[in-house]
Amino acid sequence: MNELADWADEWSLHLRAGTVSDHTVTVYARVARAFVRWLGETHPEITGPAHITPEVVGGWVRHLRDGGRADATRRRDGIAVRLFLSYVAGEPDSGLTSNPAAGLDLPMPEALPVPVISDEELSALLRSMGGSSYTDRRDSALIRVLLDTGCRRAEVVGIDLADVDLRRQEVHVLGKGRKQRIVPFGNKTALALRKYLRVRATRPAADASPLFLSIRPRDGGSWRLTGGAVGEMLTRRCVQAGLGHLHPHQLRHTWAHDLLSNGAGESDVERLAGWSSPLMVRRYGNSAANERARDAARRLARGDRV
Image (cartoon, rainbow, N blue to C red; front, side, top):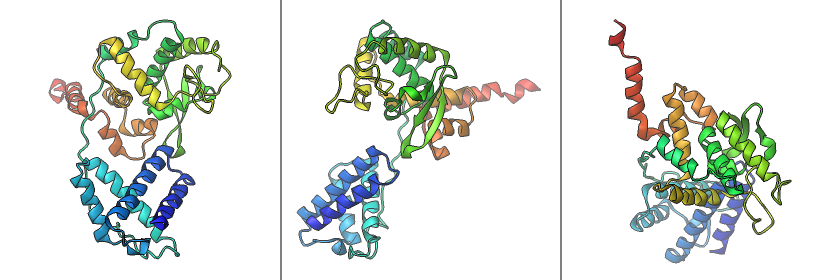
């Protein structure tokens, strides 16, 4: 089984050498290693790629289903193994002449609508960080950047000081696949950033490049706030505000809903969000799509014009 483990390690390096995000590499590599372990436990006779058949891969997918994995998880894991075996089959010395996962039947999960956050909830959330301490100023600026730009939390913690133009009220964002985009932000966000930057200048790591700094350095000396820390901060602030649980991605959904509700075209939202498909626009803010449709019908009521 060491041979298959070596192929999984090589594929991980192949992904890291490309344009795949670090998060995707981590997830896909973990799936490939899990698949190799399953082969070792259930098919000890398979010692190399040449012996992996479509029936074997299908058995692994059934194993995931029987283990209670959600449709979305089974689809993601199936895609990862399909890509892994496609890479192996493309190497002339692997012994695998075709991809045994090419015809894999994967579930198509129905995307559940993510609720948008109301103005009342957002106001309560921002009031919970209305003080003048470092964490209050940082958290307020961070939440407003998320709300105004629609950034993913991994993107917002990746922003450096040099990426922010306060005069033009724009931020340069490095998104998935290392695609760059420029996103504007409003006056209140610009004000929150200025207040945060003043108190940031008094911190021990004031000269560090990340925009949003943690309270203390992590192992390795980095002061950059992490995506996990953003989620923890939001959970803590929701408790302080007396709100139910909110997660950072709801701010992205809320941002998309607000733009669409106020007349932004789907192509505009697609570009600002860094998406490559208009289908993503329809998914985000989907929970309030009926409300937007009714509001549009009221504004465009044909009978009021005759």
